[in-house]
Amino acid sequence: MKNIIIFLILLAFGLYQWISSKSKNNTVVEEKKETPALTVERNSHDDIEAAYLAKKREVQVKGSGVVVKLLKDDNEGSRHQKFILRLTSGQTILFAHNIDLAPRINSIARGDHIEFYGQYEWNAQGGVVHWTHKDPKGKHLAGWLKHKGEIYQ
Image 1: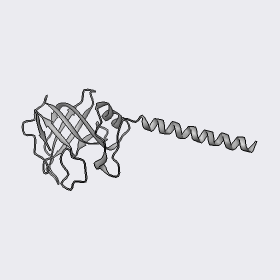
Image 2: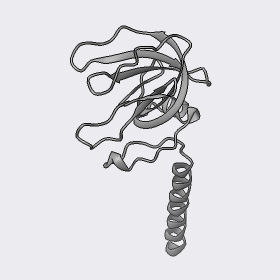
Image 3: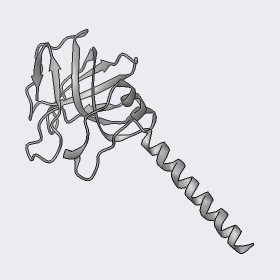
Image 4: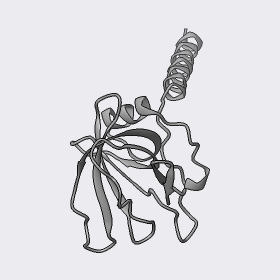
């Protein structure tokens, strides 16, 4: 009888581990690892929405959207050009593009289409994408913005 109970406990534990690994394998969002340079570029709008719903931080994302609002540059500390994009899913995301490390997009206007690759950080308003530039220390994945065929990095 004791052997049967031990067997059932081990079976239940094994089943739990298998189910846990299956649900982790189906996750569409790639979180930043110990070595961020090894993060795989594969995210889409659905992945960004999943990151928002799961309140994820430090997630590499790639996508595109339409500029819905231009905000005043943040000139305190590292300077950032700020604007809001609407994805095709309807989600809006704040972009904070470091203009001390990358060129400013001077010709950006409402209604413009922007492609991007950067790091997503959750917030209740839809999230923010930053690291849309090269890392001068070479330790973080290089991000970018693409506007009217020109890449800003």
